[in-house]
Image 1 (cartoon, helix red, strand yellow):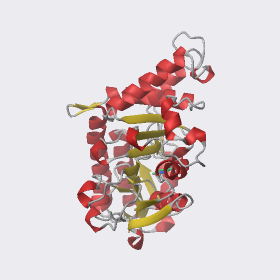
Image 2 (cartoon, rainbow, N blue to C red):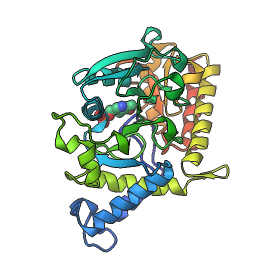
Image 3 (tube, rainbow, N blue to C red):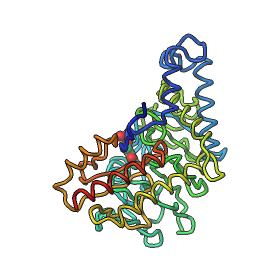
Image 4 (cartoon, protein in one colour):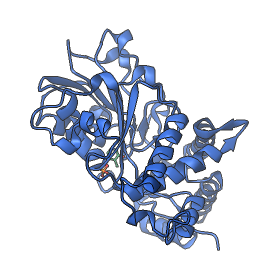
Length: 368
Ligand SMILES: *Cc1c(COP(=O)(O)O)cnc(C)c1O
């Protein structure tokens, strides 16, 4: 039986091979007599799972040796507080607002430090990417924050800004929750990155932090110990109990990613090629259609999250019901923007996007 195609924005689809392997190993992981959920996080079995996951992620994302990889709890929203608690030193931070997530980040950071909005696309309803040359960066922010893929508004940075070239020495902090491992990361432009796992890597409850070593050790006194990056790094993410099952599933996903090939590429480069093809297929269809529209300026369009509307919104319910009947699940848009959204993360095959396009075409024909 083939499973339906799941377009959820998050928690989102996980590769079927990963789910099958997890099912096969559920009762007895590698002859240990235990489920991964039942293992001590300090035992040799789990340590081997953890170390493999860390090494695989480091390889997949080409994380340089002077960056720590932390597996934490709290999710993306908690990081909105944890980042200023660790990096702001109670001074100031700059924010580039391109959608709901970066807007939430700047609001939360304001509890811990001074916040300066360097650029915002709010005036056009979060549908464009403000050009870095136009950003009004402050004199000496402790960091500059942006969300490299806005999951709700479907706006993605196709290239990270070079802050040094803009005359800014501060580290760039990126929230890459919803496109991590969908494309390479230019670490020469990044000081730290964080992301919840539940969009592109694994189950909710695991938060990934990749942070340059020189940024560690400056947490505010008020920072909870379990969220102090230095303490977490010094204890190999085991200062407190990490989300062990989430790390295990993420590890299986990393192994799956390493096996992927596309057009002579492998790993994240293969995913990028596949993700480009998927996004081109879907946007290409929407753009020529009379029924569907996407509001985002082409250069800022996300390869992961494709929000779209029906010009006749009275058809929304019929559209969603027909999609579900065809095994195309969770296409309803975020409640804050309405309409539809197709999230086409790494785990969504090209065939799933083709099935969606076939349905879009057919639905449009029957309603024309
Ligand atoms: C989903 C998401 C978050 C929030 O993650 P939680 O796990 O709900 O805290 C933060 N940022 C981005 C870009 C997201 O897509």
